[in-house]
Length: 238
Image (cartoon, rainbow, N blue to C red; front, side, top):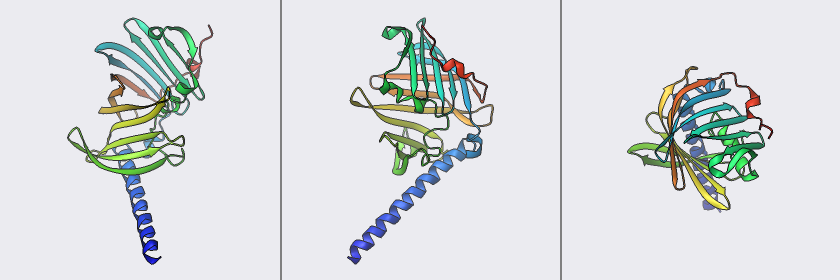
């Protein structure tokens, strides 16, 4: 009994140490991008740039109100593609998929919405969101030492965050979701961190990898805390 009790206490202490270490790494990341206090002032984001989709350039505009809504507008080979999420809703226009008029999204797709308008990122206030955070070890990523932090959301979605062990910047995020009944991994590699108009560091290059498709996004303009009209997120009537 004493041995069992000692083992349980030991495991508990190890778990506590890992949790504290994971929090320390997350806090160093917040410090690296400008501090948690500055991050808390982030309300909106407006950005313009260009995506590369199958080596085709596609100019984009992205508008986000933190915690409420996001809208991306993409010009791909002369076709306007719009993806818009708001709390509990979503709509799209995608001529490439035969959707030529604003059309509500299916419920499964709407579930992805909150991740698109969480400007502060999944590590921020993770416990208040009902997420669990743990340190999943130290690895090598593109010849760089990184800490792997594992987040588990309330709906059991897994989010792996890879934090540079030297710069403490977030280099990669892997989101494991279920789409059409199948497990799917979405990988987001972040780079080219630059100081924004409010003094925060933000990645200006993102490489998003879906199964069978990689999209590289180069941001040319980022304006944080710009006034954004909530009306732009409302689906136009046909």
